[in-house]
Length: 379
Image (cartoon, rainbow, N blue to C red):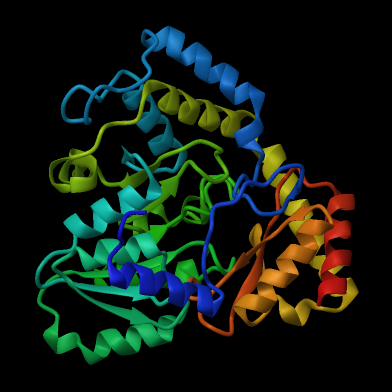
Protein backbone atom coordinates (compact mmCIF):
# COMPACT_ATOMS: atom_id res chain seq x y z
CA UNK A 1 0.00 0.00 0.00
CA UNK A 2 1.41 3.37 -0.99
CA UNK A 3 2.14 5.92 1.71
CA UNK A 4 -0.18 8.92 2.03
CA UNK A 5 0.60 12.33 3.60
CA UNK A 6 -0.01 12.46 7.37
CA UNK A 7 -2.44 15.40 7.08
CA UNK A 8 -4.54 13.42 4.57
CA UNK A 9 -4.68 10.44 6.94
CA UNK A 10 -5.58 12.63 9.94
CA UNK A 11 -8.25 14.51 8.01
CA UNK A 12 -9.93 11.24 7.02
CA UNK A 13 -9.75 9.97 10.61
CA UNK A 14 -11.29 13.21 11.89
CA UNK A 15 -14.16 12.97 9.40
CA UNK A 16 -14.87 9.40 10.46
CA UNK A 17 -14.77 10.26 14.17
CA UNK A 18 -17.21 13.15 13.59
CA UNK A 19 -19.60 10.94 11.66
CA UNK A 20 -19.24 13.13 8.57
CA UNK A 21 -17.21 10.77 6.36
CA UNK A 22 -18.64 10.68 2.84
CA UNK A 23 -18.69 7.75 0.42
CA UNK A 24 -20.09 7.28 -3.07
CA UNK A 25 -23.23 5.16 -3.24
CA UNK A 26 -25.57 3.90 -5.93
CA UNK A 27 -29.34 3.97 -5.47
CA UNK A 28 -31.30 1.20 -7.12
CA UNK A 29 -34.99 0.35 -7.02
CA UNK A 30 -35.78 3.23 -4.65
CA UNK A 31 -38.53 5.82 -5.07
CA UNK A 32 -36.75 9.05 -6.00
CA UNK A 33 -37.05 11.83 -3.44
CA UNK A 34 -33.40 12.84 -3.72
CA UNK A 35 -32.40 13.80 -7.26
CA UNK A 36 -32.59 17.29 -8.75
CA UNK A 37 -34.47 15.90 -11.77
CA UNK A 38 -37.52 17.96 -10.79
CA UNK A 39 -39.45 17.56 -14.07
CA UNK A 40 -38.29 14.07 -15.03
CA UNK A 41 -36.35 15.39 -18.04
CA UNK A 42 -33.33 13.15 -17.30
CA UNK A 43 -35.57 10.17 -18.13
CA UNK A 44 -37.63 11.82 -20.90
CA UNK A 45 -37.27 9.83 -24.17
CA UNK A 46 -38.52 12.74 -26.29
CA UNK A 47 -35.48 14.82 -25.35
CA UNK A 48 -33.18 12.00 -26.44
CA UNK A 49 -34.99 11.74 -29.79
CA UNK A 50 -34.67 15.49 -30.36
CA UNK A 51 -30.97 15.31 -29.52
CA UNK A 52 -30.36 12.51 -32.05
CA UNK A 53 -32.12 14.48 -34.79
CA UNK A 54 -30.15 17.64 -33.99
CA UNK A 55 -26.84 15.79 -34.23
CA UNK A 56 -27.80 14.37 -37.64
CA UNK A 57 -28.97 17.77 -38.90
CA UNK A 58 -26.08 19.88 -37.61
CA UNK A 59 -22.91 17.82 -37.57
CA UNK A 60 -21.43 14.41 -38.20
CA UNK A 61 -21.19 12.06 -35.26
CA UNK A 62 -18.34 13.05 -32.97
CA UNK A 63 -17.65 11.57 -29.56
CA UNK A 64 -15.88 14.69 -28.33
CA UNK A 65 -15.40 18.35 -29.19
CA UNK A 66 -11.67 18.06 -29.86
CA UNK A 67 -10.56 21.15 -27.98
CA UNK A 68 -11.47 24.24 -26.00
CA UNK A 69 -14.10 26.66 -27.30
CA UNK A 70 -11.43 29.12 -28.37
CA UNK A 71 -9.71 26.41 -30.43
CA UNK A 72 -11.61 23.64 -32.26
CA UNK A 73 -14.29 22.87 -29.69
CA UNK A 74 -16.83 25.60 -30.52
CA UNK A 75 -18.85 23.31 -32.83
CA UNK A 76 -22.09 24.07 -34.70
CA UNK A 77 -24.49 23.36 -31.85
CA UNK A 78 -23.17 26.05 -29.49
CA UNK A 79 -24.74 28.98 -31.37
CA UNK A 80 -28.32 27.62 -31.49
CA UNK A 81 -28.05 26.44 -27.88
CA UNK A 82 -27.00 29.88 -26.63
CA UNK A 83 -29.59 31.61 -28.78
CA UNK A 84 -32.48 29.52 -27.44
CA UNK A 85 -31.48 29.99 -23.81
CA UNK A 86 -30.92 33.75 -24.17
CA UNK A 87 -34.43 34.04 -25.63
CA UNK A 88 -35.98 31.73 -23.04
CA UNK A 89 -34.40 33.56 -20.08
CA UNK A 90 -35.08 37.03 -21.57
CA UNK A 91 -31.41 37.99 -21.71
CA UNK A 92 -29.22 39.62 -24.34
CA UNK A 93 -26.75 36.75 -24.43
CA UNK A 94 -25.79 33.41 -22.91
CA UNK A 95 -22.40 31.73 -22.56
CA UNK A 96 -22.24 27.99 -21.93
CA UNK A 97 -19.76 26.50 -19.46
CA UNK A 98 -19.09 22.81 -18.76
CA UNK A 99 -20.81 22.93 -15.35
CA UNK A 100 -22.36 25.28 -12.83
CA UNK A 101 -19.18 25.00 -10.80
CA UNK A 102 -17.08 26.07 -13.80
CA UNK A 103 -19.45 28.95 -14.55
CA UNK A 104 -19.38 30.35 -11.03
CA UNK A 105 -15.63 29.86 -10.78
CA UNK A 106 -15.09 31.62 -14.12
CA UNK A 107 -17.42 34.53 -13.39
CA UNK A 108 -16.31 35.41 -9.88
CA UNK A 109 -12.61 34.95 -10.51
CA UNK A 110 -12.74 37.19 -13.59
CA UNK A 111 -15.38 39.91 -13.18
CA UNK A 112 -15.07 41.45 -9.69
CA UNK A 113 -11.54 42.81 -9.38
CA UNK A 114 -9.19 44.80 -7.18
CA UNK A 115 -10.98 47.66 -5.44
CA UNK A 116 -14.41 46.05 -5.88
CA UNK A 117 -16.58 44.73 -3.07
CA UNK A 118 -18.62 41.52 -3.09
CA UNK A 119 -21.45 41.06 -0.59
CA UNK A 120 -22.73 37.48 -0.59
CA UNK A 121 -25.42 35.59 1.30
CA UNK A 122 -23.92 33.52 4.12
CA UNK A 123 -25.51 30.34 2.68
CA UNK A 124 -24.28 30.88 -0.87
CA UNK A 125 -23.18 27.81 -2.84
CA UNK A 126 -19.64 26.44 -2.42
CA UNK A 127 -18.81 27.06 -6.09
CA UNK A 128 -19.46 30.79 -5.63
CA UNK A 129 -17.33 30.87 -2.49
CA UNK A 130 -14.49 29.19 -4.38
CA UNK A 131 -14.82 31.66 -7.24
CA UNK A 132 -14.76 34.58 -4.80
CA UNK A 133 -11.57 33.22 -3.23
CA UNK A 134 -9.90 33.48 -6.64
CA UNK A 135 -11.03 37.09 -7.06
CA UNK A 136 -8.93 40.12 -6.17
CA UNK A 137 -12.05 41.82 -4.80
CA UNK A 138 -12.81 42.11 -1.09
CA UNK A 139 -15.76 39.94 0.00
CA UNK A 140 -18.11 40.09 2.98
CA UNK A 141 -21.08 37.90 3.83
CA UNK A 142 -24.48 39.10 5.02
CA UNK A 143 -27.15 37.26 7.03
CA UNK A 144 -29.23 34.80 5.06
CA UNK A 145 -31.88 36.53 2.90
CA UNK A 146 -31.52 39.63 5.09
CA UNK A 147 -31.57 42.80 2.99
CA UNK A 148 -31.52 44.96 6.13
CA UNK A 149 -28.24 43.36 7.24
CA UNK A 150 -26.82 43.82 3.72
CA UNK A 151 -27.71 47.53 3.76
CA UNK A 152 -26.08 47.97 7.18
CA UNK A 153 -22.85 46.38 6.01
CA UNK A 154 -22.71 48.42 2.81
CA UNK A 155 -23.44 51.62 4.74
CA UNK A 156 -20.68 50.81 7.24
CA UNK A 157 -18.18 50.62 4.37
CA UNK A 158 -19.57 53.43 2.20
CA UNK A 159 -16.48 55.61 2.70
CA UNK A 160 -14.24 52.75 1.57
CA UNK A 161 -16.09 51.94 -1.65
CA UNK A 162 -14.00 53.02 -4.63
CA UNK A 163 -14.85 50.31 -7.13
CA UNK A 164 -17.98 48.39 -8.06
CA UNK A 165 -20.29 46.64 -5.60
CA UNK A 166 -21.58 43.15 -6.39
CA UNK A 167 -24.53 41.65 -4.51
CA UNK A 168 -24.74 37.86 -4.71
CA UNK A 169 -27.63 35.58 -3.82
CA UNK A 170 -29.59 32.55 -5.07
CA UNK A 171 -33.18 32.54 -6.25
CA UNK A 172 -33.75 29.16 -4.52
CA UNK A 173 -31.18 27.95 -2.00
CA UNK A 174 -30.19 24.34 -2.61
CA UNK A 175 -29.86 23.22 1.01
CA UNK A 176 -32.81 25.17 2.45
CA UNK A 177 -35.27 25.46 -0.44
CA UNK A 178 -36.13 29.06 0.46
CA UNK A 179 -35.83 32.32 -1.52
CA UNK A 180 -34.92 35.94 -0.80
CA UNK A 181 -37.21 38.86 -1.62
CA UNK A 182 -35.82 39.17 -5.14
CA UNK A 183 -37.88 42.26 -5.98
CA UNK A 184 -36.48 44.09 -2.95
CA UNK A 185 -32.89 43.01 -3.71
CA UNK A 186 -33.24 43.98 -7.39
CA UNK A 187 -34.75 47.39 -6.60
CA UNK A 188 -32.02 48.11 -4.04
CA UNK A 189 -29.30 47.17 -6.53
CA UNK A 190 -30.84 49.32 -9.28
CA UNK A 191 -31.35 52.35 -7.01
CA UNK A 192 -27.75 52.28 -5.82
CA UNK A 193 -25.95 51.30 -9.02
CA UNK A 194 -24.84 47.93 -7.63
CA UNK A 195 -24.50 44.76 -9.72
CA UNK A 196 -26.86 41.97 -8.66
CA UNK A 197 -25.79 38.40 -9.46
CA UNK A 198 -28.28 35.56 -8.94
CA UNK A 199 -27.64 31.83 -9.04
CA UNK A 200 -30.82 30.27 -10.49
CA UNK A 201 -29.65 26.66 -10.53
CA UNK A 202 -32.64 25.28 -8.61
CA UNK A 203 -35.24 27.61 -10.14
CA UNK A 204 -34.68 27.08 -13.87
CA UNK A 205 -37.28 24.66 -15.22
CA UNK A 206 -38.89 24.02 -11.83
CA UNK A 207 -40.04 27.65 -11.92
CA UNK A 208 -40.24 28.07 -15.70
CA UNK A 209 -37.54 30.42 -16.96
CA UNK A 210 -36.42 31.05 -13.36
CA UNK A 211 -37.66 33.44 -10.71
CA UNK A 212 -35.88 36.44 -12.23
CA UNK A 213 -37.48 36.18 -15.68
CA UNK A 214 -40.83 34.99 -14.31
CA UNK A 215 -40.82 38.01 -11.99
CA UNK A 216 -39.91 40.46 -14.76
CA UNK A 217 -36.65 41.40 -13.03
CA UNK A 218 -34.22 40.54 -15.83
CA UNK A 219 -33.36 44.19 -16.58
CA UNK A 220 -32.41 44.81 -12.94
CA UNK A 221 -30.08 41.81 -12.63
CA UNK A 222 -26.56 41.98 -14.02
CA UNK A 223 -25.88 38.25 -14.36
CA UNK A 224 -27.64 34.95 -13.76
CA UNK A 225 -26.32 31.43 -13.53
CA UNK A 226 -28.58 28.84 -15.15
CA UNK A 227 -27.77 25.15 -15.00
CA UNK A 228 -28.90 22.18 -17.09
CA UNK A 229 -28.13 19.35 -14.65
CA UNK A 230 -31.20 19.83 -12.48
CA UNK A 231 -34.72 20.38 -13.87
CA UNK A 232 -33.45 20.22 -17.47
CA UNK A 233 -32.01 16.76 -16.92
CA UNK A 234 -28.83 17.39 -18.93
CA UNK A 235 -25.35 18.66 -18.06
CA UNK A 236 -23.60 22.02 -18.15
CA UNK A 237 -24.50 25.61 -17.29
CA UNK A 238 -24.53 29.14 -18.66
CA UNK A 239 -24.07 32.71 -17.55
CA UNK A 240 -26.83 34.90 -19.02
CA UNK A 241 -26.67 38.68 -19.14
CA UNK A 242 -25.42 41.54 -21.32
CA UNK A 243 -23.57 40.82 -24.58
CA UNK A 244 -20.54 42.70 -23.23
CA UNK A 245 -20.40 40.36 -20.24
CA UNK A 246 -20.32 37.37 -22.58
CA UNK A 247 -17.48 38.96 -24.57
CA UNK A 248 -15.56 39.67 -21.37
CA UNK A 249 -15.92 36.12 -20.08
CA UNK A 250 -14.80 34.65 -23.40
CA UNK A 251 -11.61 36.67 -22.99
CA UNK A 252 -10.96 36.39 -19.25
CA UNK A 253 -12.82 33.42 -17.67
CA UNK A 254 -10.10 30.82 -17.20
CA UNK A 255 -12.54 27.97 -16.53
CA UNK A 256 -13.91 28.54 -20.04
CA UNK A 257 -10.67 29.29 -21.84
CA UNK A 258 -8.56 26.43 -20.53
CA UNK A 259 -10.92 23.45 -20.67
CA UNK A 260 -12.15 21.11 -23.38
CA UNK A 261 -15.59 22.09 -24.66
CA UNK A 262 -18.72 19.98 -24.23
CA UNK A 263 -19.24 17.29 -26.89
CA UNK A 264 -21.97 17.72 -29.55
CA UNK A 265 -24.30 15.22 -27.88
CA UNK A 266 -24.35 17.27 -24.65
CA UNK A 267 -25.31 20.43 -26.54
CA UNK A 268 -27.97 18.55 -28.52
CA UNK A 269 -29.46 17.27 -25.25
CA UNK A 270 -29.50 20.81 -23.80
CA UNK A 271 -31.31 22.14 -26.86
CA UNK A 272 -33.72 19.19 -26.73
CA UNK A 273 -34.46 19.95 -23.07
CA UNK A 274 -35.24 23.62 -23.81
CA UNK A 275 -37.50 22.63 -26.71
CA UNK A 276 -39.29 20.18 -24.40
CA UNK A 277 -39.62 22.88 -21.75
CA UNK A 278 -41.14 25.27 -24.29
CA UNK A 279 -43.51 22.64 -25.69
CA UNK A 280 -44.62 20.69 -22.61
CA UNK A 281 -42.94 22.34 -19.65
CA UNK A 282 -46.02 24.13 -18.34
CA UNK A 283 -47.84 20.85 -17.71
CA UNK A 284 -44.83 19.35 -15.88
CA UNK A 285 -44.29 22.52 -13.82
CA UNK A 286 -47.96 22.45 -12.83
CA UNK A 287 -47.67 18.78 -11.79
CA UNK A 288 -44.61 19.63 -9.73
CA UNK A 289 -46.41 22.50 -8.01
CA UNK A 290 -49.37 20.22 -7.23
CA UNK A 291 -46.99 17.75 -5.59
CA UNK A 292 -45.31 20.53 -3.59
CA UNK A 293 -48.68 21.71 -2.29
CA UNK A 294 -49.78 18.13 -1.55
CA UNK A 295 -46.56 17.32 0.33
CA UNK A 296 -46.86 20.44 2.48
CA UNK A 297 -50.49 19.60 3.25
CA UNK A 298 -49.52 16.04 4.26
CA UNK A 299 -46.74 17.31 6.53
CA UNK A 300 -49.17 19.72 8.17
CA UNK A 301 -51.84 17.03 8.53
CA UNK A 302 -49.37 14.69 10.25
CA UNK A 303 -48.33 17.46 12.63
CA UNK A 304 -44.57 17.62 12.26
CA UNK A 305 -44.19 20.78 10.17
CA UNK A 306 -42.06 22.34 12.95
CA UNK A 307 -39.22 20.03 11.87
CA UNK A 308 -39.23 21.54 8.35
CA UNK A 309 -37.64 24.70 7.00
CA UNK A 310 -40.14 26.95 5.23
CA UNK A 311 -40.06 26.37 1.47
CA UNK A 312 -42.24 27.01 -1.57
CA UNK A 313 -39.81 25.22 -3.89
CA UNK A 314 -39.23 21.57 -4.80
CA UNK A 315 -36.60 21.29 -2.03
CA UNK A 316 -37.88 20.55 1.49
CA UNK A 317 -35.59 20.04 4.45
CA UNK A 318 -36.45 18.16 7.64
CA UNK A 319 -34.00 19.12 10.40
CA UNK A 320 -32.64 16.14 12.36
CA UNK A 321 -29.72 17.44 14.47
CA UNK A 322 -26.55 15.38 14.60
CA UNK A 323 -24.71 13.52 11.85
CA UNK A 324 -25.32 10.11 13.42
CA UNK A 325 -29.01 10.79 14.01
CA UNK A 326 -29.73 12.06 10.50
CA UNK A 327 -27.82 9.15 8.97
CA UNK A 328 -29.92 6.67 10.96
CA UNK A 329 -33.11 8.45 9.92
CA UNK A 330 -32.08 8.21 6.26
CA UNK A 331 -31.26 4.51 6.63
CA UNK A 332 -34.73 3.78 8.05
CA UNK A 333 -36.40 5.68 5.21
CA UNK A 334 -34.25 3.82 2.65
CA UNK A 335 -35.29 0.45 4.12
CA UNK A 336 -38.90 1.45 3.39
CA UNK A 337 -38.01 2.02 -0.29
CA UNK A 338 -37.60 5.81 -0.43
CA UNK A 339 -34.41 7.55 -1.56
CA UNK A 340 -33.93 10.46 0.87
CA UNK A 341 -30.37 11.55 1.61
CA UNK A 342 -28.92 13.01 4.82
CA UNK A 343 -27.14 16.35 4.61
CA UNK A 344 -24.33 16.36 7.16
CA UNK A 345 -22.22 19.04 8.77
CA UNK A 346 -19.95 20.67 7.66
CA UNK A 347 -22.06 20.99 4.47
CA UNK A 348 -24.67 22.57 6.75
CA UNK A 349 -23.98 24.04 10.22
CA UNK A 350 -23.57 21.61 13.11
CA UNK A 351 -26.92 21.12 14.80
CA UNK A 352 -28.76 21.89 11.56
CA UNK A 353 -28.19 18.52 9.84
CA UNK A 354 -31.19 17.52 7.78
CA UNK A 355 -33.01 15.14 5.49
CA UNK A 356 -33.21 16.81 2.08
CA UNK A 357 -36.40 15.85 0.24
CA UNK A 358 -36.69 16.71 -3.44
CA UNK A 359 -40.13 16.57 -5.02
CA UNK A 360 -40.72 15.82 -8.70
CA UNK A 361 -43.52 16.07 -11.22
CA UNK A 362 -43.46 12.25 -11.54
CA UNK A 363 -43.91 11.44 -7.83
CA UNK A 364 -47.39 10.04 -7.22
CA UNK A 365 -49.68 11.15 -4.39
CA UNK A 366 -49.40 7.61 -2.97
CA UNK A 367 -45.61 7.84 -2.92
CA UNK A 368 -45.72 11.22 -1.17
CA UNK A 369 -48.17 9.96 1.45
CA UNK A 370 -46.05 6.84 1.97
CA UNK A 371 -42.95 8.96 2.54
CA UNK A 372 -44.67 11.23 5.07
CA UNK A 373 -45.94 8.19 6.99
CA UNK A 374 -42.37 6.85 7.28
CA UNK A 375 -41.15 10.32 8.25
CA UNK A 376 -43.72 10.46 11.05
CA UNK A 377 -42.49 7.12 12.35
CA UNK A 378 -38.86 8.29 12.21
CA UNK A 379 -39.51 11.63 13.87
